[in-house]
Length: 49
Image (cartoon, one colour):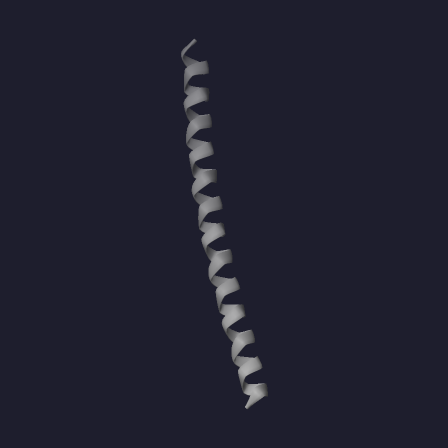
């Protein structure tokens, strides 16, 4: 019984860790796209001069 509980706790911890890493990856991707868009605006302003 105790062993099953330990295994269950480990499984839950692994699922939580996987979920959190997925969220941070999505946040990283969103921020990267925002940086690229901002840099594109800078390049456009430089080309207009």
